[in-house]
Picture (cartoon, each protein chain N blue to C red):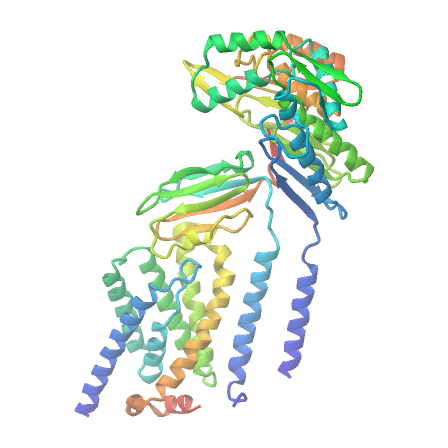
Length: 316
Length: 127
Length: 178
């Protein structure tokens, strides 16, 4: 008689076991571009995470200005060569886009900012201001350098400046991923590159909730991309002045005009570029450029939102 | 011989099944590993909240007030562990790195516990 | 009669000492889950409950908790309160179960006692430290059932030893003979 009870119990147990796992959320974090990249997929049955990881990995190697990889001509190769280097079409494309961005942003985005970036990176690590003369020399180098392109994917740096594509790489790669996911009909995702470049699909049809640190508010968004720049990412303070990793290529200054800038638009590459550039511009300038390009912007100064596009609705 | 133990077998089997079911519930549901926030409660009942999503891949050490001696806790991107604790059994240190919600690290001796929560009902990301 | 009394007192004292020693020994065996111990001393408590009565068992249990924590230096700390609550609850549960369900063997009673013991401990842990320990409860529960069964079998065979023979009341004798 109690064996029947036992059978019932085991049946319930198996029923219980099989009913688990109805929500299929996949998440993976990898570490390219000296930061992290977290991919979240919501109820997307067929995602080839390995393929995506490989795509990102390839760009990581190509855009690395500090390391060389056997058999690959990357940023490091170009930086350390005084002659033309033949590169992969992918890298060629990013470099071309970098030059376009330089023109478009009137020089506030400059791909040849490598040495200046490095100087300030070391300054942040050691928490000491760099030598004024070094900065001046590096600005001079930038002004006297240029990037030259030749047929058949050949690139050369004229002058002593070095390439650093930090302000465009994450956005560019996310754009690539965005197109890739579209071709595979994957729509329910969120990919976060170092918290500064984000592409959004939707969360099971719904909006994502994006919180903004320091401000205690957030906004909802889906099917777009977001670029943020914040001094909070890497910085140090001397005499009450905050120096961050965002460098003005004209003045060599690491002091930004704002604490955080958030830019929202479908083009992930542009968002990455402009979120950095806007940190160096006055709010009026930002508004003008944003209107012209249909970006939605949020500007934060001293932990307060000083400007936000009217279309963005905030929640607390 | 088993007939004598009939009632015991029923009793023990029922207890076992109930607790195994409870185990399944705890181990199967509620296992988010993204966008984690660590709530560290120290011996003074002060809760320190650390956004593990914003941490880098390099481990950063923090000190937590313990009842007998301070603990050393290591935080990195969506992961946390107890590096050092003065407790006799070292259960908390033996737990290793935790990067999933609802798997708390408890140090009874020093009255410290670390619980990871997902920002799910909060924000999907924080910028 | 007198010889019997002396034998009784000696035996109870030895049991109490044994409970204390086992308690201290098992505190050195870590199991990876906070607050879980093997429950070796519970064998003694069960034997006291069956051979003698509830009150002697309670006495031994209290002596064990107080003296072992005193010797280990953890008296009046959280572990002490956990042990105390667990021991008392487990003893009460075992006594009630044994009295009401006379047909239940030592193994069943011991398992229930074990379950109540850890439940009491977890209760205090939650009151003291918040809900973090709730996560461990199901796992600890399963472990307690396993150790409870083992303790039960050990108790069963130990009680058959000659040294306890003269103290078996007819009621207990039947159960122990099973």
